[in-house]
Image (cartoon, rainbow, N blue to C red; front, side, top):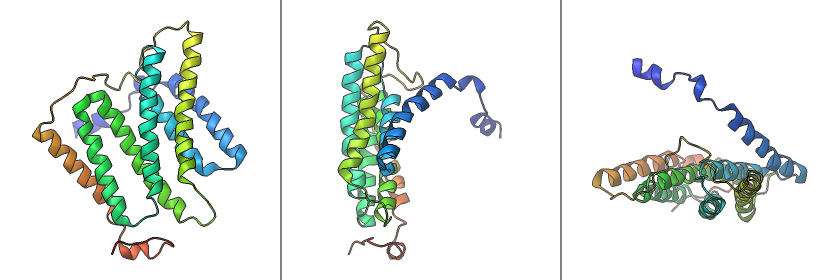
Amino acid sequence: MSWLSKVFELNPAGLNWPRGVLFLDIALVPLVVFWAIGHEQYLVSALFGLLFTWLNDPGGSFGHRASHIAVFAVVGAGVTALGFGIGGEAWGWLVLATFAVTLVAGLAVAFGVRRFVAALLLNVWFLVALALAFGLHHHARVTSYTWAQVLAWAGGAALWIVLTFVGWLIRGREDRPPMMAEIPGDTSRRKLTRPLIMFAVIRALVMAGTVAPRSDSTCRTATGCRSLP
């Protein structure tokens, strides 16, 4: 049990309160905006767009950071569109999409550990978006548009780009370290060996299996849920 106690041991030195408070302060912007306009159903997309873009900030010069963040935001927008676009479809399509996205995220290790972590973040967001879309699809009093969810995600990512630009100007246009030193910065490419491919496939099957239990009998209890023939 010694290894288990080490895994769940609380390390106060690992808590970065300034970083946490900084994110909470920034998160107030989309929170206030969406509450003010009365469209809280898009708040989650904006917050995840802000959070995951912040986590994926590679540091360095502003141009380097902005280009990498922009690519991440565009891919994330596509993942958002997919998740919310099929959220109300038959469970079989959700299984197939989950398997495909998870498999691609696992194989992204071929492009370096840094990109693998970025792919995992987008993989996590896809699963969240899928679950959120399914819930909103069966909520009679809430209307959610896929394009608006994509804009909310992009808006969260754009907010972080704007803040990095402002910080870059305030600090005299100096290069900045990565926001998350815990995330590996290795971008060296790796060969897709058999163990890596098998790990990606098994992981994709497991994640797809978590979506599969939403069977036909479960679907009949939710209005609008369709089943594959």
